[in-house]
Every structure is written in C-alpha cells, then in structure tokens.
Amino acid sequence: MFNEIDGASRLSSQINHEPWKCWTVEDLAEKLEQNGLDEAAEVFTKEKIDGSMLDQITPEFLEKIGIRERGLHLKIKKFIERNGCLEAFGYELSGSKVFNDPVHGHMELHPLCVAIIDTPQFQRLRYLKQLGACYFVFPGASNNRFEHSLGVCHLAGQLVTALQRRQPWLNISKKDILCVQIAGLCHDLGHGPFSHVFDNKFIPLVVKDGSWKHEEASVAMFDYMYNDPANDLAKLFKQYGLTDADRIFIKEQVAGPSQNSKEWSYFGRPKEKSFLYEIVANKRNGIDVDKWDYFLRDCHHLGMRNSFDYTRFIHFARVIFVENQFQICVRDKEVFNMYEMFQTRHALHRKAYQHKVTHAVEIMLVEAMKEANDFLLIPGKGKMLKMSECIKEENMDAYMNLNDSIFHQILLSPDPNLQKSKDILQALQRRRLYKCAAESVPIEGTRFNDESVIKDQIMKALTEEEIANLGLGMMAAEERVIVQVSHLIPKNQFKEQLVRVFLKPSDDRDADGKCLQLLMEAFSTWCKNNKMKEPKKFVNIEASPKKHAPEGYMTPEHPTNPTVKTYSAGKKITKILF
Image (cartoon, rainbow, N blue to C red; front, side, top):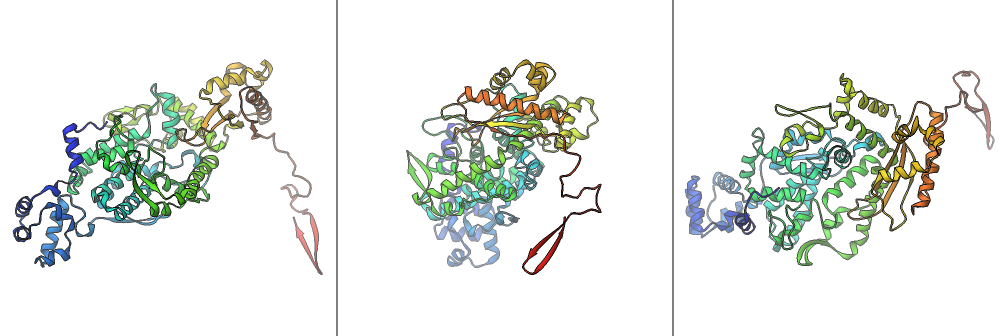
C-alpha cells in the first residue's frame, strides 16, 4: 500500500524530513539570491546563518541583524514558508480558518487542512451519519462524519502541540504536527453508507473476501483526492513542504503499517518518533483523539453523560521510552480518568451502538442493501458499478458518490427489481421493525462466532407444529428468525459477547405475539444447553389494541362526559377535570 519509496529513500526520509536544515551558509545565500533576495543573502552570509537556523527567524531576529524593512520581512517569510520551514515567524500562515463547533467551540485549522476540507471527496462526509442506524432510534443522533473529522483534526493538533511544548527534545517539527492534523482530518474518508453497517455487515455478506475495512478506502480516497487535478493539492502539499514520505506518514496513521517487522514497520517516520502513530488511531491501546471526539460528540447528540476529561490526559501526557519504543504515557494518578474513558465507551455501546432496536434497524438496512446491490448502480467516470464494487481502489470515483442517500434512491426508484428492497425500507419508515425476542451473554470462557449454527440449534428446539406457527413451513420459519452475535466492545480489547434472536413481523400482530413467545422459550432452552446466562426476554409485539379506553379516561366517543374528581388541600377545595 505504501511502497512508493524504496529502502534508500526511506532511510533518507527518516534522517531528513526537512531538507532546509541541511543547507550550508552558501546554499542558503544562493537560494535567497535565486528568489531576488540579494540583500538578505548578503546579511545572512555575514552573520553565518545556515538552514538549521531558519526555524529561529522572527521579525525581531531580522531587526537585530540589520534587516529592518517590513516589506523585506514579508518576502523572507514567504521564501521560508515555500521551502517548508513552518516554524519561522511564529507559524502565522495566511489562509487558516476558524470553525465554530458545538463540542469544541472555536477551532482554527491550518490552510492546507482548509484546502482538503474544500474538496468534493471530503464534503461527501456531510452525507454520512456518524451514528448510522442509531438515528432511527435516537432523534438527536443526527451528527455526521464531517464535523467529527474536523474535531479529530483539532484534538490531534492539541495533543501533539502539547507534547512538543513540554518535551522539546522530542524534535517534533511543525511539519509533524501538520501531518498528524491531516491524518485526523482524513481518517474517516473511506466510510460507506450508514457508517460501520456498510463495512462490518454489508460487505462481508456480498463480497467473498469480506475482510475489507473502511481504513483501506480512507487511504484510497486520500490518494484519489490528492491526485484529482481539480483540487490542486499536490501544489499545496509542496508549498507547505510536505514530501512523499509525509504523505506515506499520513496514510500510515490511518491504516497502520504496510508490513510487519520486529524492528520497525513504518516508512513515514523513524522509530524515534513512534509515539506520533499513537495520536489519531492508537493500535497499541486504543486511547486516541478519534475516540475522544466521538465520546464528546455522540454523548452530546444522544443526550448521554460523558465523564471522561481528555484535557487532563493532554495535560499529564508525556512521551517515555518503554519496551524499546517511545510511547505516549500518562501519570499513574490518572488511572481513574482512564477507567472513566472505557466506562464511557462501554456505556455508548450498551445504550446506543448495540441497542436492540438499533440492531434491528441495522439488520433491515443490510437486507435492503443486499437486495438492491445487483440493481442499484452507482455512477463513476464512464461506468456504472454495484455498491460492492465501489470499494476497490480503482473505483474511488464511484465510491465518492456512495452515501446515506441510497436510502431515498431506493425508495424513489421506479425499477421493479428494487421492490423487495423498497418494501423493507417502507416497513422501516412505518416502524414495522424486526422484533428482538430475547438476548443473553455467554458465561465467561464461552465464545460463539457462527450465527447460522446457533440458529439451526434454536430451530431444532421447536416442534413441527411450533415451526408451522412461526411461518408457512420450515423455510418460511427460518427466514423469519434472525440470530445475531455482537461484541459489546471491540473484540481486540475485550471478549464480552451478546447473542440476540430477532423475529421478522407479519401482518397478524396477535400471531406474532405467540411466535415471539415460542422463540423466547426455544432460545431459553438453547441457553441452558450452551453455557449461557439466563436470557433477558422482551415482549415487543402486543395484541391488537382494545377498542375502548379504560374506565375513568375520556374517549373521542364521549367528549362531553369528563370524570370530575375533588381533592382537599387544607381549606381550599380544588376540582380537577380529567
């Protein structure tokens, strides 16, 4: 993925990310003269200023060595910026913008980040819900990947800048900071419709090798965005001193290393700067700014409490050499703040991401997309592709057009081939959702992976008569029953599982209630035989509503006969009409 430079250039990039630092006094004077700065070249030569001193140049420094003309100051500043030394002049770059964010307040972003934001590849994130199917359950969960990416960029800059300020011997350059910010900005470019529903559930269902992850598409989309001549990013990257090695560094932060090596697996930065890979997407322990932003943002939109304080982490974070590698560490007294972080993550999974109704909606969305995959074609440049074909690296022009709008594309399409998919989405709109009959958690040490095996075992616990009640024969009954095994927290860190069984509703609500009861009993039997805890049962489908309201309540048929009740409050008598 990242084999753009060979071993020799890799070594060169590790030693020398900032070529201007290697300029001699004569080299610097020559380059100044080539840019029409003869007076500056003469003074710099006299003061023996070489490239390694460029990051120390300020207006005050120029005045001190005898260069007092403000216009010449500006020309020298532009010369230094063009050559990639962003530290000079206090890093005051024109073109930066301030974004007013509901979570972080005012965020000032680098002009190169602004240029990336103003591309169609990045603007696509406006049409991808951050919380996917949760929006069908929680009315406030309307935040998009767009603002999340801005927030991650902002937090990445805050953390790496704090490390630079407190530990100057780490040699964190402004170019390192810029690359980390760009990685935070672009880390979610590859998400598909309804976020993780697309890569975790839809793609494994329709692609033979279902191991594809959105990080791969993020890297491919980054390259597509960079190479798009209409964006003119190549020129801007060069203007701010970013090289091929820097672009590789950005992509490695998003997708991880391109090779496994005991020594060092990354090409973009040397091992001495290994801690930079722990800021945006921490593959070592999962503590990174991506999570900090979505904790804050998701809790804000879901109406939940977030007790983790990322500002304390930034304040107490230090880079320490541990286990033969430089790692971002935090004070021991911050252990409870870390507990709060993982507790917040668990609460989000338990209450929102893995909510039983959220899962029901996800199942319906996946089924609708699967039914539409062969018929809903996405336009690329001179070609029309299936949704499952858009994920290939060479098809990013089509993938750029794939977002949450497919929901309405299916609903509004006159194509009869999409009718089955349309029926599922219309049922979703009418809240005729798949019903969760029961759920259970495996006893410690027990693990389940194959959902089809669990489903077969549950079906065998039913009699032929019960199966007939679930549907019209075994085939119809099996189509109505869905088993889902999920992880409350990503399985790389934790092993807690959740097994749920769902039932597709029919037009007969009374019959569905009986079917749910049968399914709950069969699931309970399966749990007892497979080292599962006592299942939590749900009654989601009620019998038909009663025709008459309970006694004491007004009904539309009797609007003129309210019940009158009298209450005594001391000496005062109050009449309340119901």
